[in-house]
Image 1 (cartoon, rainbow, N blue to C red):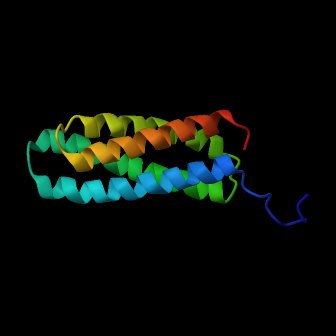
Image 2 (cartoon, rainbow, N blue to C red):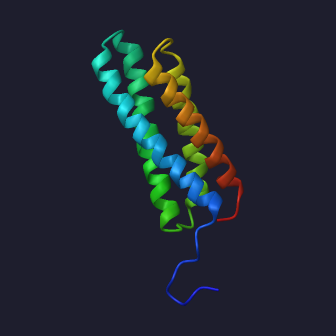
Length: 122
């Protein structure tokens, strides 16, 4: 039981999801830097960059909302899972780039955890 004015302890699942969101956020930021240095086809790079930015911002916001136990956290987790799925697809569209493949993997992991959290009662 929690004292008045204190938040309940965060579940292991929520902590794991929060960690996955922050890991994905960091990976997207690193991948944006790599993408900017790559050059390549401008249209494709634009699509990848937009997906990376959306995913980076969404994962950070999702983590923030879970940390403060926002009543909208479950909805944010569902949106975050979608942004992560789209980012993973965009990263996979750049074959042979190891940074993109690592980012896609982090995005898939985060998407799976966020989908699980979106279905859970927070």
